[in-house]
Length: 125
Image 1 (cartoon, helix red, strand yellow):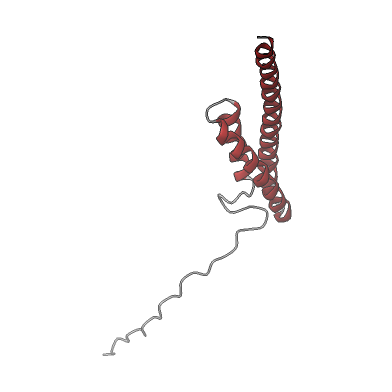
Image 2: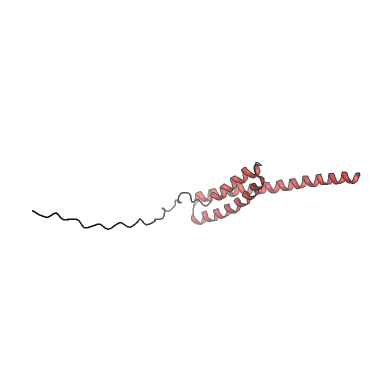
């Protein structure tokens, strides 16, 4: 009768090593243009629709900055989806900034006219 052989103890397996994603596809949730797009949408909703005007000014300026940074990163990485979202965010934010400038000039003109009317009426008395 033969003695059954006992298999040697197995070595524990090392943990798996991190691998880069395949080329041409960005990792999930890492689109560089997303902050610019988010700030652009926030600037439209908060500022231009009148919900929170001061927040609209801040988010529109942040949207322009984040859109430019995201566009540069997306182009450097060859990320087409990031480039598209960066451009959309940049356009929305730039439109919001331009509309804020137009609104402030209009408001300043109205206040100047009202000030001259009130000042003129006070001088006539």
